[in-house]
Image 1: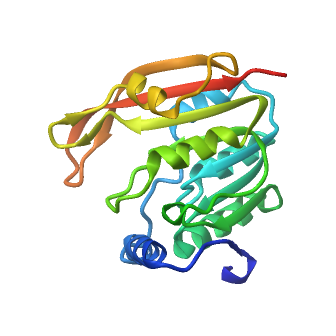
Image 2: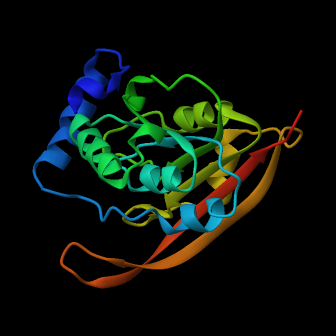
Length: 214
């Protein structure tokens, strides 16, 4: 399904490193993610009226497919063509391919999907390759329509011994209180399975902010 993808990324060192890393990440195993949508997305978005959505770092498409099943029209972006191919195949199997536009973007190279969206979702938008994450999230906020929602879910532990609070991420976005209303700002615990099958408790930061209608 490679020919069906829209490729919008700049050539450069960041592009090559990011694409190489994430292609290897997906190619070296048959399936990386479960295919289920992220629980926070389901919790917060499940009751919303469907509109247009942007899924940043969509991976193998679990969130995008769930959104499409709820009636959203989704633009789903990732740097890995392998991940996007798998996502597109699953979307076709699920009968929602006509509701999802899969696009290849390298956010590390500062390319960003055009358009405005009623929902912009950034679920665990972390990378072991350094990238301008704050700038990307600010771009994400800029892409939200009036009355639309920006949903960010982060790992609270960003590295061994390093913890971040949701208030820190929100402050970095520098959103005007005259233009945005904070709906959720919290740290949530959940059970997760480690690489060796061990169960552990992890903490996620949840930030949901709504752009005020003009």
